[in-house]
Amino acid sequence: MTLKTQAEKKYLRDWLRRLPPRWLFRLFAWFGFKPAPMKALIDASAFMLPQWMYTAIKLDIPELLLQRPRSARELAEELSLSADRLVRLLYALEQHGYFKRVGRRKTNHDGNQLDGVWEHTALSAVLSEKHPNTIRAIVLHWIEDCYAPSGTLLHAIKADGCAFRLHHEGQFKGFFEDYLSTFPEQSRQFSNAMSATSAFTDEAVLRDFPWSRYEHVIDVGGSNGSFLELLLERCPKMKGTIFDLEEVIVGARTVWSEKPSQLASRVTLEAGSFFDVNTIPKLPESSAFVLRNILHDWSDDECLSILSNLRQAMPSEKSTLVLIELGLGFDANGHVLEQARSTIDMLMMTMFDGRERTRTHFENLFKQTGFELKSITSTRSVAHVIEATPI
Ligand SMILES: C[S@@+](CC[C@H](N)C(=O)[O-])C[C@H]1O[C@@H](n2cnc3c(N)ncnc32)[C@H](O)[C@@H]1O
Image: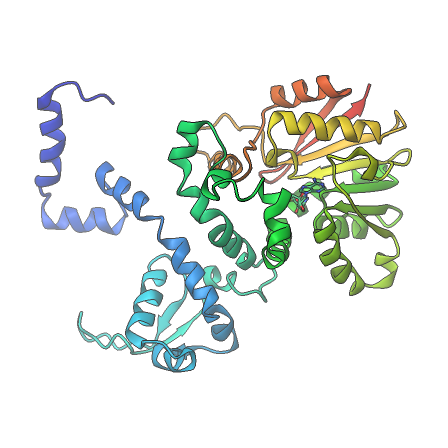
Protein backbone atom coordinates (compact mmCIF):
# COMPACT_ATOMS: atom_id res chain seq x y z
CA MET A 1 0.00 0.00 0.00
CA THR A 2 1.35 3.44 -0.83
CA LEU A 3 0.40 6.61 0.92
CA LYS A 4 0.12 9.18 -1.79
CA THR A 5 -1.80 12.06 -0.35
CA GLN A 6 -2.00 13.87 2.94
CA ALA A 7 -5.69 12.86 3.01
CA GLU A 8 -4.76 9.18 2.92
CA LYS A 9 -2.25 9.65 5.74
CA LYS A 10 -4.84 11.56 7.79
CA TYR A 11 -7.38 8.78 7.15
CA LEU A 12 -4.99 6.20 8.61
CA ARG A 13 -4.06 8.43 11.59
CA ASP A 14 -7.72 9.01 12.35
CA TRP A 15 -8.35 5.27 12.13
CA LEU A 16 -6.86 4.80 15.57
CA ARG A 17 -9.01 7.59 16.97
CA ARG A 18 -12.28 6.16 15.65
CA LEU A 19 -13.25 3.88 18.49
CA PRO A 20 -15.53 0.93 17.75
CA PRO A 21 -18.50 0.21 20.08
CA ARG A 22 -17.34 -1.40 23.32
CA TRP A 23 -18.83 -4.84 22.48
CA LEU A 24 -17.07 -4.87 19.10
CA PHE A 25 -13.78 -3.82 20.69
CA ARG A 26 -14.09 -6.71 23.19
CA LEU A 27 -14.93 -9.16 20.42
CA PHE A 28 -11.91 -8.06 18.39
CA ALA A 29 -9.66 -8.26 21.45
CA TRP A 30 -11.00 -11.72 22.35
CA PHE A 31 -10.20 -13.09 18.90
CA GLY A 32 -6.81 -11.37 18.88
CA PHE A 33 -7.63 -9.04 16.01
CA LYS A 34 -4.94 -6.38 15.72
CA PRO A 35 -5.04 -3.35 13.44
CA ALA A 36 -1.78 -2.94 11.46
CA PRO A 37 -0.19 -0.27 13.72
CA MET A 38 -0.92 -2.40 16.78
CA LYS A 39 0.51 -5.58 15.21
CA ALA A 40 3.63 -3.66 14.14
CA LEU A 41 4.04 -2.29 17.66
CA ILE A 42 3.70 -5.75 19.19
CA ASP A 43 6.17 -7.18 16.64
CA ALA A 44 8.64 -4.42 17.51
CA SER A 45 8.36 -5.19 21.22
CA ALA A 46 9.23 -8.83 20.55
CA PHE A 47 12.92 -8.04 21.06
CA MET A 48 12.28 -8.39 24.83
CA LEU A 49 10.69 -11.85 25.04
CA PRO A 50 13.90 -13.87 24.47
CA GLN A 51 15.58 -11.79 27.20
CA TRP A 52 12.81 -12.77 29.62
CA MET A 53 13.23 -16.42 28.63
CA TYR A 54 17.00 -16.11 29.05
CA THR A 55 16.63 -14.47 32.47
CA ALA A 56 14.28 -17.22 33.67
CA ILE A 57 16.72 -19.89 32.44
CA LYS A 58 19.75 -18.26 34.06
CA LEU A 59 17.81 -17.99 37.34
CA ASP A 60 17.18 -21.76 37.08
CA ILE A 61 13.43 -21.22 37.31
CA PRO A 62 12.62 -23.98 34.75
CA GLU A 63 14.69 -26.47 36.79
CA LEU A 64 13.17 -25.41 40.14
CA LEU A 65 9.60 -25.64 38.83
CA LEU A 66 10.34 -29.04 37.34
CA GLN A 67 11.08 -30.28 40.87
CA ARG A 68 7.73 -28.94 42.14
CA PRO A 69 5.44 -25.91 41.74
CA ARG A 70 6.38 -22.97 43.95
CA SER A 71 4.86 -19.65 44.98
CA ALA A 72 6.59 -16.49 43.81
CA ARG A 73 7.53 -15.70 47.40
CA GLU A 74 9.17 -19.11 47.82
CA LEU A 75 11.05 -18.75 44.53
CA ALA A 76 12.18 -15.24 45.45
CA GLU A 77 13.49 -16.42 48.82
CA GLU A 78 15.37 -19.35 47.29
CA LEU A 79 16.94 -17.10 44.68
CA SER A 80 17.44 -14.09 47.01
CA LEU A 81 15.51 -11.82 44.66
CA SER A 82 12.80 -9.20 44.98
CA ALA A 83 9.46 -11.04 44.87
CA ASP A 84 7.84 -8.09 43.11
CA ARG A 85 10.32 -8.08 40.21
CA LEU A 86 10.25 -11.86 39.95
CA VAL A 87 6.47 -12.11 39.78
CA ARG A 88 6.34 -9.41 37.11
CA LEU A 89 8.83 -11.37 35.01
CA LEU A 90 6.82 -14.58 35.45
CA TYR A 91 3.58 -12.78 34.69
CA ALA A 92 4.99 -11.29 31.47
CA LEU A 93 6.17 -14.76 30.40
CA GLU A 94 2.80 -16.26 31.33
CA GLN A 95 1.11 -13.94 28.80
CA HIS A 96 3.13 -15.74 26.10
CA GLY A 97 2.33 -19.22 27.39
CA TYR A 98 5.50 -19.75 29.49
CA PHE A 99 4.70 -20.90 33.07
CA LYS A 100 1.30 -20.55 34.64
CA ARG A 101 -0.02 -19.50 38.01
CA VAL A 102 -2.63 -21.73 39.62
CA GLY A 103 -4.69 -21.27 42.77
CA ARG A 104 -4.81 -17.51 42.45
CA ARG A 105 -7.73 -15.88 44.27
CA LYS A 106 -9.74 -13.87 41.77
CA THR A 107 -10.58 -10.78 43.81
CA ASN A 108 -10.18 -7.80 41.53
CA HIS A 109 -7.45 -6.26 39.43
CA ASP A 110 -5.50 -5.42 42.57
CA GLY A 111 -5.57 -9.05 43.75
CA ASN A 112 -2.40 -10.13 45.53
CA GLN A 113 0.32 -10.55 42.89
CA LEU A 114 2.01 -13.10 45.12
CA ASP A 115 -1.00 -15.39 45.34
CA GLY A 116 -0.98 -18.91 43.96
CA VAL A 117 1.80 -21.21 42.84
CA TRP A 118 3.72 -21.25 39.59
CA GLU A 119 4.05 -24.37 37.49
CA HIS A 120 5.22 -25.36 34.02
CA THR A 121 3.29 -25.26 30.79
CA ALA A 122 4.26 -27.37 27.76
CA LEU A 123 6.12 -24.30 26.42
CA SER A 124 8.08 -23.44 29.56
CA ALA A 125 9.00 -27.11 30.09
CA VAL A 126 11.29 -27.07 27.02
CA LEU A 127 13.37 -24.36 28.72
CA SER A 128 14.51 -26.98 31.25
CA GLU A 129 17.70 -28.85 30.39
CA LYS A 130 16.02 -32.08 31.48
CA HIS A 131 13.29 -31.93 28.82
CA PRO A 132 14.00 -34.40 25.97
CA ASN A 133 13.40 -31.61 23.43
CA THR A 134 15.08 -28.87 25.43
CA ILE A 135 15.87 -25.60 23.67
CA ARG A 136 17.77 -24.21 26.68
CA ALA A 137 21.21 -24.25 25.01
CA ILE A 138 19.80 -22.61 21.87
CA VAL A 139 18.34 -19.72 23.88
CA LEU A 140 21.64 -19.30 25.77
CA HIS A 141 23.65 -19.33 22.51
CA TRP A 142 21.33 -16.88 20.77
CA ILE A 143 21.35 -14.40 23.64
CA GLU A 144 25.00 -14.70 24.65
CA ASP A 145 26.59 -14.98 21.21
CA CYS A 146 24.10 -13.59 18.68
CA TYR A 147 21.98 -10.93 20.39
CA ALA A 148 24.57 -8.16 20.61
CA PRO A 149 25.94 -8.71 17.04
CA SER A 150 22.32 -8.46 15.79
CA GLY A 151 22.40 -4.89 17.09
CA THR A 152 25.09 -4.14 14.49
CA LEU A 153 22.93 -5.26 11.56
CA LEU A 154 22.25 -1.75 10.24
CA HIS A 155 25.96 -0.92 10.19
CA ALA A 156 26.74 -4.32 8.61
CA ILE A 157 24.20 -3.93 5.83
CA LYS A 158 25.44 -0.44 5.02
CA ALA A 159 29.05 -1.59 5.10
CA ASP A 160 28.28 -4.85 3.22
CA GLY A 161 30.06 -6.72 6.02
CA CYS A 162 29.52 -9.33 8.71
CA ALA A 163 27.68 -7.99 11.79
CA PHE A 164 29.49 -10.40 14.15
CA ARG A 165 32.93 -9.18 13.02
CA LEU A 166 31.91 -5.51 13.04
CA HIS A 167 30.38 -5.86 16.49
CA HIS A 168 33.64 -7.28 17.85
CA GLU A 169 35.59 -4.57 16.01
CA GLY A 170 37.98 -7.00 14.36
CA GLN A 171 38.89 -8.72 17.64
CA PHE A 172 37.83 -12.06 16.13
CA LYS A 173 38.36 -13.34 12.61
CA GLY A 174 35.12 -15.27 12.88
CA PHE A 175 32.80 -17.19 15.18
CA PHE A 176 34.36 -20.56 14.31
CA GLU A 177 37.89 -19.34 13.55
CA ASP A 178 38.86 -17.92 16.93
CA TYR A 179 35.81 -16.82 18.98
CA LEU A 180 34.83 -20.33 20.11
CA SER A 181 38.42 -21.32 20.83
CA THR A 182 38.82 -18.17 22.97
CA PHE A 183 35.69 -19.04 24.98
CA PRO A 184 35.62 -22.84 25.61
CA GLU A 185 32.37 -22.54 27.61
CA GLN A 186 30.65 -20.90 24.61
CA SER A 187 32.04 -23.69 22.41
CA ARG A 188 30.57 -26.37 24.68
CA GLN A 189 27.28 -24.50 24.83
CA PHE A 190 27.22 -24.11 21.03
CA SER A 191 27.69 -27.88 20.59
CA ASN A 192 24.77 -28.45 22.97
CA ALA A 193 22.69 -25.94 21.01
CA MET A 194 23.45 -27.83 17.80
CA SER A 195 22.38 -31.11 19.43
CA ALA A 196 19.18 -29.42 20.58
CA THR A 197 18.32 -28.40 17.02
CA SER A 198 18.17 -32.16 16.32
CA ALA A 199 14.71 -32.37 17.78
CA PHE A 200 13.36 -30.28 14.93
CA THR A 201 14.69 -32.16 11.92
CA ASP A 202 16.50 -35.42 12.73
CA GLU A 203 13.58 -37.83 12.73
CA ALA A 204 12.35 -36.54 9.36
CA VAL A 205 15.85 -36.44 7.83
CA LEU A 206 16.57 -40.00 9.00
CA ARG A 207 13.25 -41.45 7.85
CA ASP A 208 12.78 -39.60 4.57
CA PHE A 209 16.17 -40.39 3.00
CA PRO A 210 17.69 -43.86 2.24
CA TRP A 211 20.78 -43.68 4.46
CA SER A 212 21.49 -47.41 4.69
CA ARG A 213 23.12 -47.41 1.22
CA TYR A 214 26.32 -45.94 2.77
CA GLU A 215 28.87 -48.16 4.50
CA HIS A 216 30.63 -45.31 6.24
CA VAL A 217 29.56 -41.73 6.93
CA ILE A 218 32.01 -38.96 7.78
CA ASP A 219 30.03 -36.23 9.51
CA VAL A 220 31.99 -33.13 8.52
CA GLY A 221 31.58 -30.45 11.20
CA GLY A 222 29.70 -33.14 13.12
CA SER A 223 29.92 -31.31 16.48
CA ASN A 224 29.45 -33.78 19.33
CA GLY A 225 27.87 -36.36 17.04
CA SER A 226 24.19 -36.20 17.99
CA PHE A 227 23.13 -36.76 14.38
CA LEU A 228 25.66 -39.53 13.73
CA GLU A 229 24.50 -41.34 16.85
CA LEU A 230 20.91 -41.51 15.59
CA LEU A 231 22.09 -42.50 12.12
CA LEU A 232 24.21 -45.40 13.43
CA GLU A 233 21.38 -46.58 15.65
CA ARG A 234 19.16 -46.73 12.58
CA CYS A 235 21.78 -48.38 10.31
CA PRO A 236 23.45 -51.12 12.41
CA LYS A 237 26.09 -52.02 9.77
CA MET A 238 27.23 -48.45 9.18
CA LYS A 239 30.45 -46.96 10.61
CA GLY A 240 30.92 -43.30 11.29
CA THR A 241 33.50 -40.57 11.79
CA ILE A 242 32.97 -37.22 13.47
CA PHE A 243 35.28 -34.62 11.95
CA ASP A 244 35.43 -31.19 13.57
CA LEU A 245 37.74 -28.55 15.04
CA GLU A 246 40.15 -29.61 17.78
CA GLU A 247 38.25 -27.87 20.63
CA VAL A 248 34.97 -29.46 19.53
CA ILE A 249 36.48 -32.94 19.27
CA VAL A 250 37.83 -32.57 22.83
CA GLY A 251 34.22 -32.12 24.02
CA ALA A 252 32.95 -34.88 21.73
CA ARG A 253 35.47 -37.35 23.21
CA THR A 254 33.95 -36.79 26.65
CA VAL A 255 30.44 -37.21 25.28
CA TRP A 256 31.36 -40.46 23.45
CA SER A 257 33.25 -41.94 26.39
CA GLU A 258 29.83 -42.23 28.06
CA LYS A 259 28.05 -43.95 25.14
CA PRO A 260 27.39 -47.73 25.07
CA SER A 261 30.50 -49.50 23.77
CA GLN A 262 28.69 -51.35 20.92
CA LEU A 263 27.84 -47.92 19.46
CA ALA A 264 31.04 -46.07 20.39
CA SER A 265 33.19 -48.83 18.84
CA ARG A 266 31.76 -47.96 15.41
CA VAL A 267 32.75 -44.30 15.73
CA THR A 268 36.06 -42.53 15.22
CA LEU A 269 36.72 -38.91 16.10
CA GLU A 270 39.08 -36.81 14.00
CA ALA A 271 40.20 -33.24 14.63
CA GLY A 272 41.12 -30.92 11.79
CA SER A 273 39.74 -28.27 9.50
CA PHE A 274 37.84 -28.55 6.26
CA PHE A 275 39.94 -25.61 5.05
CA ASP A 276 43.08 -27.75 5.36
CA VAL A 277 42.87 -30.64 2.92
CA ASN A 278 45.64 -32.52 4.71
CA THR A 279 43.56 -32.88 7.86
CA ILE A 280 40.38 -34.18 6.19
CA PRO A 281 39.95 -37.96 6.65
CA LYS A 282 39.92 -39.88 3.35
CA LEU A 283 36.49 -41.18 2.45
CA PRO A 284 36.25 -44.97 1.93
CA GLU A 285 34.33 -46.44 -1.06
CA SER A 286 30.51 -46.54 -1.04
CA SER A 287 30.51 -43.94 1.66
CA ALA A 288 29.44 -40.35 2.15
CA PHE A 289 30.66 -37.07 3.49
CA VAL A 290 27.68 -35.60 5.32
CA LEU A 291 27.53 -31.86 5.99
CA ARG A 292 24.61 -31.00 8.19
CA ASN A 293 23.99 -27.27 8.58
CA ILE A 294 27.53 -26.48 7.48
CA LEU A 295 27.56 -24.66 4.14
CA HIS A 296 25.01 -22.10 5.32
CA ASP A 297 27.64 -20.86 7.82
CA TRP A 298 29.99 -19.77 5.02
CA SER A 299 30.26 -17.32 2.13
CA ASP A 300 30.33 -18.62 -1.47
CA ASP A 301 34.14 -18.33 -1.63
CA GLU A 302 34.55 -20.29 1.59
CA CYS A 303 32.05 -22.94 0.38
CA LEU A 304 34.08 -23.34 -2.82
CA SER A 305 37.18 -23.98 -0.78
CA ILE A 306 35.40 -26.49 1.56
CA LEU A 307 33.85 -28.39 -1.38
CA SER A 308 37.11 -28.48 -3.37
CA ASN A 309 38.95 -29.87 -0.35
CA LEU A 310 36.30 -32.53 0.23
CA ARG A 311 36.39 -33.46 -3.46
CA GLN A 312 40.13 -34.13 -3.11
CA ALA A 313 39.47 -36.38 -0.13
CA MET A 314 36.94 -38.44 -2.14
CA PRO A 315 39.09 -40.86 -4.08
CA SER A 316 36.26 -43.03 -5.31
CA GLU A 317 33.64 -42.01 -7.80
CA LYS A 318 31.30 -44.33 -5.92
CA SER A 319 31.29 -41.91 -3.02
CA THR A 320 28.74 -39.22 -2.32
CA LEU A 321 28.47 -35.79 -0.80
CA VAL A 322 25.30 -35.33 1.24
CA LEU A 323 24.23 -31.90 2.45
CA ILE A 324 21.49 -31.34 4.98
CA GLU A 325 20.38 -27.75 4.67
CA LEU A 326 17.54 -25.98 6.37
CA GLY A 327 15.49 -25.25 3.30
CA LEU A 328 15.65 -24.27 -0.30
CA GLY A 329 12.79 -21.81 -0.29
CA PHE A 330 9.19 -22.88 -0.29
CA ASP A 331 7.88 -20.15 -2.58
CA ALA A 332 5.14 -19.51 -0.05
CA ASN A 333 5.37 -16.06 1.49
CA GLY A 334 4.47 -16.06 5.16
CA HIS A 335 4.42 -19.90 5.36
CA VAL A 336 5.69 -21.05 8.74
CA LEU A 337 8.53 -23.03 7.09
CA GLU A 338 9.50 -20.02 4.98
CA GLN A 339 9.50 -17.86 8.12
CA ALA A 340 11.84 -20.37 9.78
CA ARG A 341 14.11 -20.50 6.70
CA SER A 342 14.34 -16.73 6.31
CA THR A 343 14.95 -16.25 10.05
CA ILE A 344 17.88 -18.66 9.92
CA ASP A 345 19.07 -16.94 6.71
CA MET A 346 19.24 -13.62 8.61
CA LEU A 347 21.06 -15.32 11.50
CA MET A 348 23.62 -16.75 9.06
CA MET A 349 24.10 -13.31 7.49
CA THR A 350 24.53 -11.70 10.91
CA MET A 351 26.90 -14.20 12.46
CA PHE A 352 28.95 -15.71 9.64
CA ASP A 353 28.35 -13.91 6.34
CA GLY A 354 26.66 -17.18 5.38
CA ARG A 355 23.26 -17.77 3.80
CA GLU A 356 20.49 -20.26 3.12
CA ARG A 357 20.92 -21.27 -0.53
CA THR A 358 18.63 -22.16 -3.40
CA ARG A 359 18.96 -25.08 -5.83
CA THR A 360 20.69 -22.78 -8.34
CA HIS A 361 23.20 -21.64 -5.72
CA PHE A 362 24.11 -25.27 -4.99
CA GLU A 363 24.34 -26.20 -8.68
CA ASN A 364 26.79 -23.34 -9.22
CA LEU A 365 28.92 -24.32 -6.23
CA PHE A 366 28.99 -27.97 -7.35
CA LYS A 367 29.87 -27.10 -10.94
CA GLN A 368 32.95 -25.19 -9.81
CA THR A 369 34.22 -27.88 -7.46
CA GLY A 370 33.88 -31.14 -9.41
CA PHE A 371 30.47 -32.30 -8.26
CA GLU A 372 27.14 -32.89 -9.93
CA LEU A 373 23.79 -32.43 -8.22
CA LYS A 374 22.12 -35.83 -8.08
CA SER A 375 18.98 -35.29 -6.04
CA ILE A 376 17.22 -33.00 -3.62
CA THR A 377 14.93 -34.76 -1.16
CA SER A 378 12.45 -32.76 0.85
CA THR A 379 11.66 -34.13 4.30
CA ARG A 380 8.82 -33.77 6.75
CA SER A 381 10.67 -30.84 8.30
CA VAL A 382 12.33 -27.60 7.28
CA ALA A 383 15.43 -29.61 6.21
CA HIS A 384 16.28 -30.85 2.70
CA VAL A 385 18.80 -33.56 1.83
CA ILE A 386 20.96 -32.73 -1.18
CA GLU A 387 23.05 -35.44 -2.83
CA ALA A 388 25.97 -34.68 -5.14
CA THR A 389 28.39 -37.07 -6.77
CA PRO A 390 31.96 -36.47 -7.97
CA ILE A 391 32.40 -35.98 -11.73
C1 LIG B 1 26.34 -24.99 12.66
S1 LIG B 1 27.37 -26.16 13.41
C2 LIG B 1 26.65 -27.65 12.83
C3 LIG B 1 27.00 -28.82 13.69
C4 LIG B 1 26.34 -30.15 13.25
N1 LIG B 1 26.69 -30.54 11.91
C5 LIG B 1 24.85 -30.06 13.41
O1 LIG B 1 24.14 -29.94 12.41
O2 LIG B 1 24.38 -30.08 14.56
C6 LIG B 1 28.85 -26.03 12.48
C7 LIG B 1 29.93 -27.02 12.86
O3 LIG B 1 31.05 -26.83 11.98
C8 LIG B 1 32.22 -26.92 12.74
N2 LIG B 1 33.33 -26.23 12.05
C9 LIG B 1 33.50 -24.89 11.94
N3 LIG B 1 34.63 -24.62 11.26
C10 LIG B 1 35.17 -25.82 10.95
C11 LIG B 1 36.33 -26.20 10.24
N4 LIG B 1 37.17 -25.28 9.72
N5 LIG B 1 36.59 -27.51 10.09
C12 LIG B 1 35.74 -28.46 10.60
N6 LIG B 1 34.61 -28.16 11.27
C13 LIG B 1 34.33 -26.85 11.45
C14 LIG B 1 31.83 -26.26 14.05
O4 LIG B 1 32.72 -26.56 15.07
C15 LIG B 1 30.43 -26.81 14.26
O5 LIG B 1 30.45 -28.02 14.95
